[in-house]
Image 1: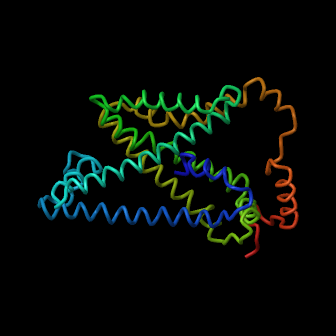
Image 2: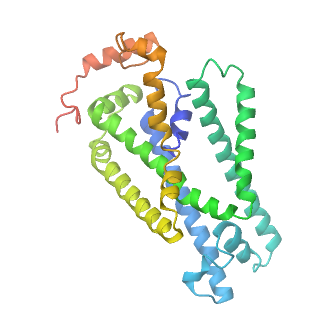
Image 3: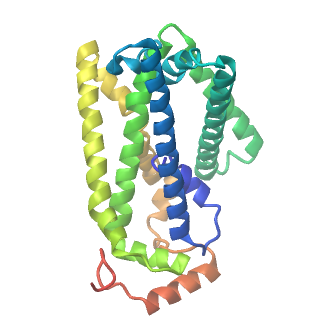
Length: 299
């Protein structure tokens, strides 16, 4: 979710000084608990399907036509005592999950477009309408005869490369270029709480290594799938098509005429935009100097 910009966009509406650490712990705890609850629920239903049908465990996830949400689980619900009730509750759950995710995705995209093209996006309701219509039209391809293949490829590859790349760039920029020490000091200023050394360890070592391993896994999976279907070049380009928007927009921003003129000026220093917030931040930075770029406190 971080790679899709959801938390970043929603977090931009928070107050400047608030408990960042509390928000991180709350969101992480809610996500972990939901994952555990979902895993227990899904595997309990699959276990019930195995018990009733007698199929092997390794075939249970593909027993309903190859899809878990719309194949295996509905088949298990049909074997229960109240199949209509459980199927209705499952459909309601999927609808609520889908509509909430859809709303946040649209919100992120609208905020991105309205910020990048402020001159041409004056009417917000019109921008939302255009984004929804275009999204609906592009999604019609998934209703065609090859829609399931496209959906599987997009879900497994194209929708995973960009978030991993974005998260990797965020780690490199904020942790290594800006500095984990400066980042921790900013978090302490915002939340008025101590940032533990565990955060340094995760920022510097754990998160980059985890992202690298996951990206490596998806790259090898893409290579195997593309070699099997025989469309290596097209598969690679399609998988990284959304990622290409990052260097394309960067080049557009750097080489457009207005920005070329601004490059001759002095760059705006990093910090809060509001004058009162900037003054408070600069005062906090002077009182808490960073001793190291990666760790600003002595062990």
